Image 1 (cartoon, rainbow, N blue to C red):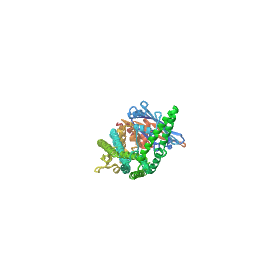
Image 2: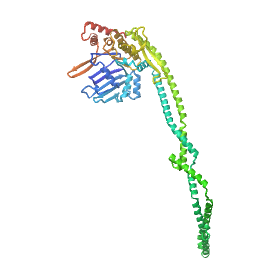
Image 3: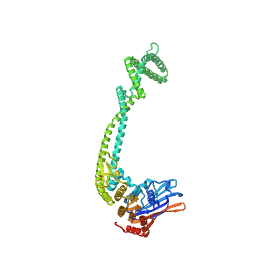
Length: 556
């Protein structure tokens, strides 16, 4: 619970240091004194929106700190432990806003982002403002209130997790579907290209071989002529050729070798040369004999080369790389063809996730139906106690399996009738302003009992309520204060008199400076404040007696 609040240079507050106790604490004061200023400051310390205008004029910054006893708040202790910010069973939140609008936050002396301050604050305090009942006119708010009362957090979390899984799979499916749709045009082009290249069927290395053979056939006449002339010079010349001349040289050297044996090595070399010339002549002769003009084969090669070069230009690759390009296109086409199976699997997974979500939404609906009937009865009883004897409250729940959301598939609508014989109608259509205030308060008080936060703040939620009804409101809040810490900013003496504790807010002006102060009231001081609330500035014995009756009344 909140044990201490310190406020420095906030709006018209120069300095406040307040200690708080358990139970119900009422806060009263004169009109315009700033009864809600401590609540506003606490809201800022809990991560609320801050701005430079909140800083007291002339001050460099506003500073607010709140101290909490966490001995009975396991959720807050767990949060602090998870974020390595725990410090035994006490927690201190601190927030500053500079005159330039810069904001800083601390938890137990550790600087933290505002989001963490807000997250922790939600486990510590729940604030119900005077206009909260207007929010109850919206279906989303009504659904949240029912879920808070039901307390089925596990079901909500499971439903939200299933929803996220379903939407993730659905997103993946749609992305792949779009991707495959874009690939379809590519696949059609690839099918045509691969089929065209399949029909041509150029093998690896074939283009180079064709090109070589084509070149040889194209130059066949020249090759025949030149190879014949080479053979004539090498061995077939009638008068002189290399082979006959070499044989003559060998004869001359062999004759000399008879005179000089040292020429034996030269003779051997010449014989080797003659053998090489003879073999070269033989190979060249076979080459010449193999050359023949083949116009038909030349035409075939000419046509295949032309087709290869045409396809190479079409695919913008060198002709020698056309076979490799053909293989690459075939592999890409094979990869594209596997997407349909993946799409089908994703569709199956998505449908299974949706079915799981629908099942969890159905469980959530069953829980809501159960707690809605319980809440119907309790709110109806409270409304009748709040001077609405013929009021009847009912929560209509429409289950819509085709409209799944993170919070299930239910649309909730608060229905009410305040007069006998009238049918139930939506809250927004059937309740007047005063009735709406009482209905909102009845719902807030009941649902607040189920909220896990240990400190509840009601900021002038009793607006539009007076007389005997105000006394009932006071008793409701006091009963709530038996189990949790309650703060209530009020202008009603019937409510203020029910508080276990009482704080008074006053505004003082000194020259050009205005300052708001807040102080605890006890004994005669509290009695006097209740009398002021009852009778205004003129306090009589009767108003004091009435005030005393309010104080001694203790149904809790």
